[in-house]
Image (tube, rainbow, N blue to C red; front, side):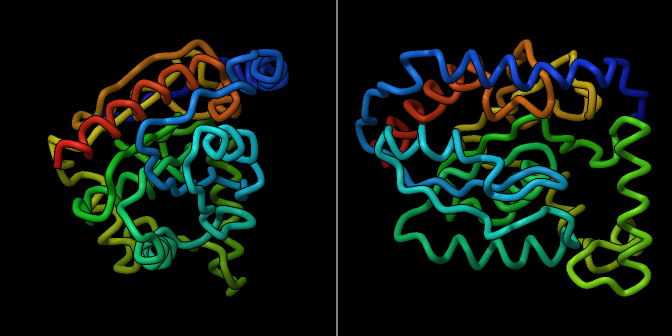
Amino acid sequence: MEREPVSAPARGELRYWTELGRLLADPRFHRVAPGHDPRPVLLIPGFLAGDASLTALAGWLRRRGHRVRGSGMRINVGCAGRELTRLEAKLAEFDRPPIVIGQSRGGTLARALAAGHPDSVTGLVTLGSPVRDPLAVSPSVLRTVRSFARLGDLGVRGVFSSDCRDGACCAEFRSLLEAPLDPDLPTLAVYSRSDGIVDWRACLDPDASCVEIDGSHCGMAVNPGVYRQLEDLLDRTEATTSRR
């Protein structure tokens, strides 16, 4: 896609706290109706975030009856190729194919997992994830990405390097981002036109069901509107897999 600048102001990301407050005040968040046949879930956090950033979502899923596993990331700044390989091993830990949910950069990894392992993933959700162009981000975030890449270039372990952009280490990851998804796979790609971090156009996965919400990028995992969309996706996943 043609890269365009992120037009939404970054100060809009302060809405995170409003979104979190609305979620915590919503009775439906606390009193969740159990799913008919809840599938296990793998959660993958966004850039510069760890599994702890998805605590609210993980708790809601568990109250719904899902077995939830985190990615094992304390901070998502690793080489995408190496992280993809590690997450592939995570899939093997489940006794049945999980739904994979990723926020921001985590969603690009989730998308690659689903494309590369269609028989091992039973549903896919991306939250503000630039799957069409991982670098379609605001100038300030892009500067941060380049700073971390320089650390990787200097040999800092566990951090991506400049080679990851075009190098062989992430070739499979890049290929899977463009690969088609199983047309029978229940999918949800959430985006916001007022996203102050990622260009919302980069979140429009041509193989997914794309849904717009009103909210911030950082608040995707605590936005009440996202949870309503997730309920629908989880119900569809249970209905689809029960027919198999």
